[in-house]
Length: 401
Image (tube, rainbow, N blue to C red):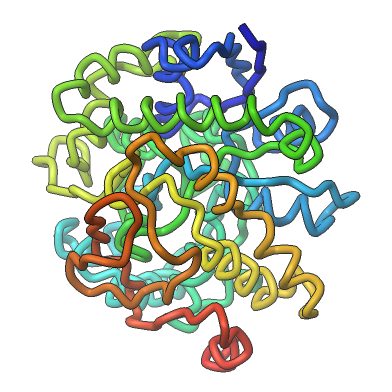
């Protein structure tokens, strides 16, 4: 057995790593997978950068930021596998949500209108809203900024963004430290269940197949341990398929609920696994089939275009300097070549291309693929924009900020 230590945070979307160990997929590949529960993304980043773990569940933008040296010394990371697609939500205190559309279903169905309602609510609120984010280099933060700005809200001027670990969001809501937060499940669902908050917008409604958590390794470790990395990716692919199968969801929810994993009630975790989201305490669950994807529709394939979308947003918000070298480095963090190598011969269906127009798929669409038929689900942004990774300057020029 080859030992591998992998860090994770107590989130529903740690499911693939957890299932890889608990269901024996890692052991089948000769890997003794040890999971290291970590409470904050900053600590997880440091554990990976300083070699305490060989792999980690990581925020995709954080992998890009660490590789570019944003906020610290540059350490090249590699992302050969996406652990899930979507899975986060923005929730706000009920008194703030009351100023939005009173029908939470309508609120979630029309994120553009809700963004404008949010802008009006800021003007009526007694103070600048305090919104918790899990890390400034997170998909949650980038999607929140994108969504707020669509209604003319300056996320650096009109709201206060507070970085907190996901598991501390509930306590921060109870104490009044924050007015809302965006995080991965089950923490938004838990805040709603306690009556602390209501749903305002789902990440899957801002970008229907947006990038979320990835498997990250140090690039030098990946280069020096190719055979081991390939076996790890095979194990994760099998685990992701198991997590996505409807017949396994109840067992998966119980597995995640354990104190050494997420440590929250299984019924709370099961809702999002079953494609449902309760928008308000006591309300009926709403269907959200694309709220969280683990495997289907090439969910594990690391599209380079998504790494470049992340980079475009870091440039947009002044968090990264615009340069050809930085753009190339950001795009190189995602490693479809390693994914293809690891899963070659496994029967996995792989996209024919490694980048695509993000936001261009309006309906389930068959695409060129190796090994069989591949159907991609709708991946639109809520504002109808399309991101072309070969025309980033033009894309950025289309935003007021």
